[in-house]
Amino acid sequence: QVQLVESGGGLVQPGGSLRLSCAASISVFSIRPMGWYRQAPGKERELVASISSRGNTNYEDSVKGRFAISRDNAKSTVYLQMNSLKPEDTAVYYCNKYPVNGGDYWGQGTQVTVSS
Image (tube, rainbow, N blue to C red):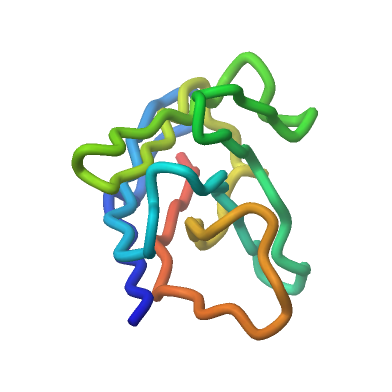
């Protein structure tokens, strides 16, 4: 059974940093590409960053140079280091496989709010 538990969100001022974690119970985690996604109020969920099984990374243009995705296969955990946060980064952040299919399970996510 797939389980995804995101944590690390919170309220932070513009320019601040947060580190998100995702404990993933997914079969053969170590060989699966993983991604961090976010959904802002009134908007569709979007991919923020992805990481291959070998550690190759890709980022959505608006977060390049500010966010860093990483993974620890021994712990089946994916991380998202977020620096220089902006109000437009406010969203619920989720992790999941990359890419996801329409019927895939989603965890509860973790709320990130960037506000002064």
